[in-house]
Image (cartoon, rainbow, N blue to C red; front, side, top):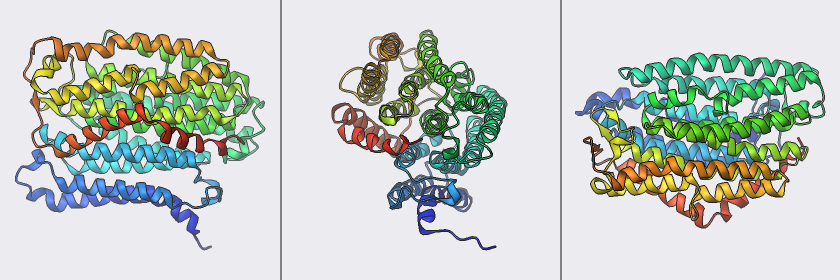
Length: 491
């Protein structure tokens, strides 16, 4: 038996293959050149940063190499549709910007080693595969592969107590979620008559096994995206994870797992129980995420609960699709929202990554008091990101929320739009707290800024421009997100 790949299959696998290869090169170059760096783990190690950036750019370019999105790939295991490529593009851009800042950030806290950069590349490769997966086996393998990278990154700083604690919780709860996911896939396999392709699930929405399987898969992937009530790991893991890695996890993991959730729910979306459950999860996720963030004094935990609330916003278009029995038009709101979430959330984590207190992250509201006078540029970027997260006009966050809420009203789910607006109004309070601390309070603690961290500064600049660009000129990304939807309508 010979194993042969078509040209279309090679083109489809190229982005993830480049990312995996980039990780291997980073490990090898650090082993060869790292020992020669006189600053050791406190050096910026530009060779790792530039290697990661080159790999991400090549992977992004490779996304455009697939010329026939409808061609079957690897016996139906992967798809080259625009949805997968759109999500892969967000993942790769997130990895590129995170990698640019990693050298300066890790050098400042004295932990710049090749494995961090390699784990970013390996995890991103698995995420791209998950975004392109079109059958149950490919999805599960991709989820488990990216989870390995996430568990290690969560516990990367071994002498931080909260890092070890968060990684342990993440690993244990991740194992439970994988069990739910695999069991759900087994039910889907049985309910579809032995098919593992998502296309084989179509037309079986009323089957009891399919409904049970869809609910179990929703639980498994709901854990990954931080939906309530599967969210308890999120604040603990974010608090223990290095700041820049937490930002990467907050964006990239949500993108790939949410796309996988979209594919499975659409394929099994004929059941009213699943539709009602998704709607209920969206409501409680929005409300609980925003309410729990109100009394947080740790910035990582605040952004973690904020991310939970944003998961609820992202589920609103999925509710609309299920209510319209598979019409995927409303999903363009989720895709555009993911793009705005990228620039907004990663900007906040990147700006905070430039600040340290000794060898630890600067992650409390008290630690950024008076920052507006001491480090005005960093304070401005944090302010811009918080304003965008709150959904203030002329920012990316406002356009993302406006798109989703207006689609909800047009789709007859005005109560979801109302709940979303209420949640956004609640969020204004806790997003303004860091801004008030930076500009209207005197500094209580000594905060240092990473010196000569060119990658961090470049990433902050690009993300800040992205927030304003998507807030003022969203048409290009909106049209791209709409173009990624039509092929899903037939699920």
